[in-house]
Image (cartoon, rainbow, N blue to C red; front, side, top):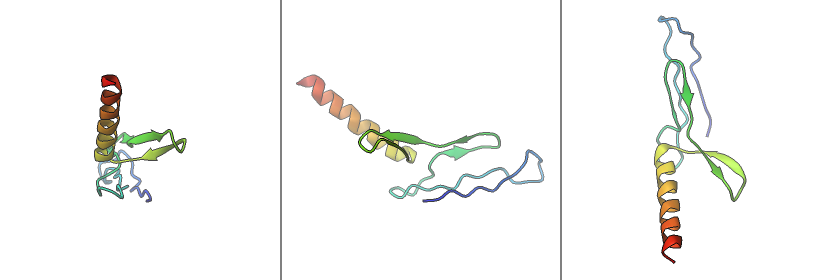
Length: 76
């Protein structure tokens, strides 16, 4: 998985900066960009002690898994 950017300036004659990293699972973009900011979704993997880049759907699935796991522990 790699990132490629079209580097631009704020000048209107140039295209806005584009983020083009894609999720290997869902094929969605890993984050988003606008003319000023680049936002990349990331998640810390405690098992491997590293930050992983994920798309929004991956983060949502991870959140739901963790939430259901926590709910089960509370019920015990």
